[in-house]
Image 1 (cartoon, rainbow, N blue to C red):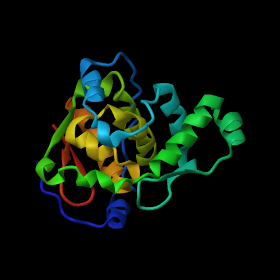
Image 2 (image 1 turned 90 degrees about the horizontal axis):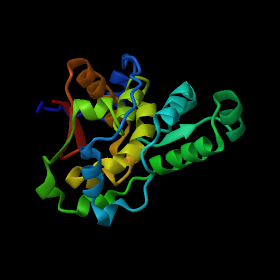
Image 3 (image 1 turned 120 degrees about the vertical axis):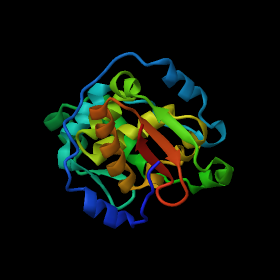
Length: 218
């Protein structure tokens, strides 16, 4: 695993936000058994009520929002600069799509730091692996689609897909998108597009510091 240089969230974003993230990779299919195992392993005492995985069609509509979907600040909290009527008439969102998007935006602002109290020292270095097959078929394919568009779209997809991540990494993920910060999603987008280009997967490691989860191509 590569050594990370400590930088502030704002510096990280300034350095990475101008780089191209690749071409959107539209993929759909049946979930592999790994998805079911991930769902079963979520830390029951921390996760609470969270959104389920989004459909590929919903993520494509989110991607179509472009710059209308933005991070509010250097956290992972999202903001949509459109009315519900705009979403329906200009971007072909259904009523369910509008409600789902508003729920994603609201959930993205959550940052529950209590997750750090769950034996974090023992779990430092823990790993959750998303294989290349997982990225190109089934639930996690929406991450690949969103990663090719923007970190904001990836954060929106992550809100739902994160419920499929189990074990110690899933415990931290349950703390919310804003707990990870915008730099995490910029880095994750690079790692996902890189992994797909190389025919590999992405491993999520727990690390001390910020962000508390680090993605690596493996």
